[in-house]
Image (cartoon, helix red, strand yellow):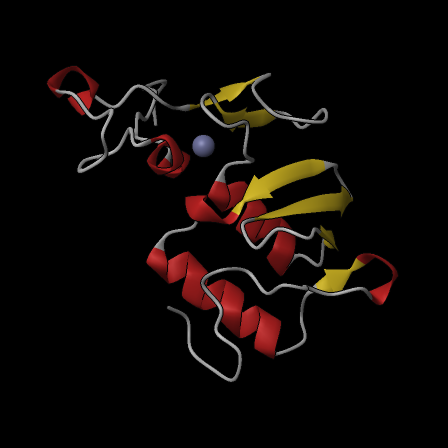
Length: 133
Ligand SMILES: [Zn+2]
């Protein structure tokens, strides 16, 4: 990385029509403005998306692989990490490859849930009975 900040369009901008094809998309918005920055996290996490506060997806996947404890929500697009760190993650930030890996970890029962309470509803990219979307 050598100090260069990676810029991107937060995928959650789609919710307000601020991605290509959306009503609030302009030529000016063509230049990615979002990044993962210190102190942009929600609930005390170290880094977050400057637009929505989500934990960076690489950090999230590393935590999940390492057996972090998740706390499911009633939303199909977000989850909390409760241990060993506290963080909020929005699934829109996962790449296709990360969605596939997350799905594999889920079906392999690798995910650790607080008090054993799993997803309900499932993350939006996981279809009951099978594949990722
Ligand atoms: Zn974001």
